[in-house]
Image (cartoon, one colour):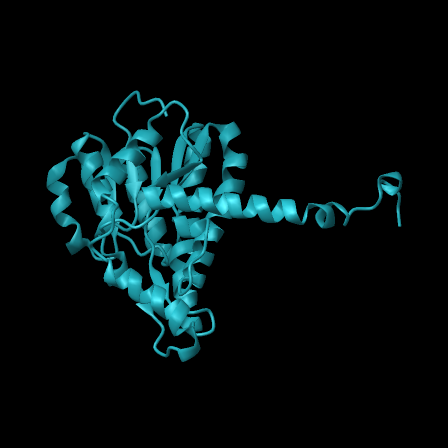
Length: 286
């Protein structure tokens, strides 16, 4: 994205983790930044770092979302970069999962993200410029036991984003998915609940993976500061990617998933191709 003046970044979920680190970084770069969180006490200190607008925002609350977007556009005239970072996790085998927890996670990770796009996209479209960054995960490309419904929210973000960039890129608007692996944020300890009742049959699969992820929280290989610098670099590049993998585990996991798919598709190619009408009958009405 060609930068001709200080861009306006609008970032959701800035209390901790990637959101807070990214907000601090772009303020240090001199960019005008809309910093949002459900509790503004968690982010008010960032106001001293630069030209910041601190706003309360729960992305599941439409009235708050509308008010935040209006306040940002009134102050800065428009939004150049929307970063949909707000999100939560949830640990549970699929069978263990509680519907109320799953729906809450979808409300934040999918419908909250979608709401922000719906509110900000019209002005971007009118201006024929803008950049939408959707925080996904390596878990949006490949699934893990105990994270099935979290994976489902990220798979949904992937599908939505892929359709979106086909629709808006001809209008001058870019869309990018960010797909990190494990980073030293407090995601596993702070924003990821788990099912109240665990089933013994899943102890060696979902239970084991849940314990592993909890145990390495704060010890992951990923450096959040390097990650957010990479996000800014990608946004400002002449040819930004649609998929920005972050971390060695993300890169290796994505390549491994591609290889698994390639082998399985090839093994079943004849069956897949055989499901069409024979060529001599294609185009005929049954």
